[in-house]
Structure formats: structure tokens, C-alpha cells
Image (tube, rainbow, N blue to C red):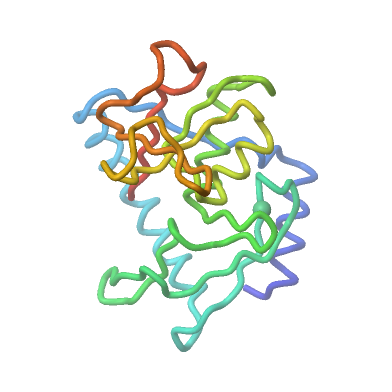
Length: 195
Ligand SMILES: [Zn+2]
């Protein structure tokens, strides 16, 4: 689709629909998941054809215009073939790990993480949040939006757990966190995104 046409379509959607809402389906069991997958096979096939229609003739990077929930504006997302894989014998971009916003630098997965977190958990500006990363754009964004955000990385036993290295990066082992119980409002939230 021509880029100017996709921008017009996004503008119309923004004007007449609330596209800032991420429509989700809550699934509580493996059986439910299987039923959901089976019932949406046609949708998945349509999605694949749409995604295939976006591919350039050669495996070069390209842009796709869309609405960035984090930046609250229409941007030109960057798509390339990093982490790509074959679907039906066609090399497809890794849509989950790409579609990088040129403004906030978050990729599709991390933008969806912020979107879902804010939509479903409704954190306050002063909520105490713990995230198991500290050197990423996602951590920086949360720290800016929610100053009581704390992050860490796994550095290993070269440093005590709960201690920071010379760059201020806190060392934590997810299996034995050094924080006190109930220290955070949002620390029990486990986000696992895969497709
Ligand atoms: Zn953005």
C-alpha cells in the first residue's frame, strides 16, 4: 500500500475510532487457547496475506506507517529482516521484534508491553514498579513515565545480589530477588510475549 494512502487511513481511524485501545482476548486454559486458535485460523490466513503484501521485492529494510501508542502519533515504523524467519517458505520480517519506532525506539513487542501494562494495570504516576531490565529503551521509558521504577540486570556472582556496578546497574537473580516482600506495587506481573 502506498505510504501516503496508509497515513490517510490511519488518520481516518484515529478520528473515528479509538485505536489506542488494544483489543485482547483473555484465555485461562490450554483448551481455551486451542479453541481460540482453531476459531481464528481464517483470520491468521488473512493476516499472513496482508503481511506478505507489505514485503519489498528484495529483502531490504522498508517503512510502514502506523500509530505509536507510546509517542501518541503516526510514525514511520522501520521494518527489516533482522531475526527474520520463513513462513510458508517465504522469508518474513520478525514483526514482533521489528516495527521499530523512530521516535521512542521501541519495537512492536515492547510497545505492546507498555500498552498492555497501562491499559490493564492502570499504574499511577508514583506507582512502585520493578522490571527485570535496566539497560533498555523500555526501562528508560518506564523510569521517565513512572519515576519509582526500579530495574536490574543479571550480572552474575561477580557482584553481590542487590548491589550496583560502577555504572549504577543493579545485579539481581530472578530466582532469588534481594528486595523485601511487597516492596513494589507492580512486581508480580510477568510479561511473556511470544508468537
Ligand atoms: Zn514511538
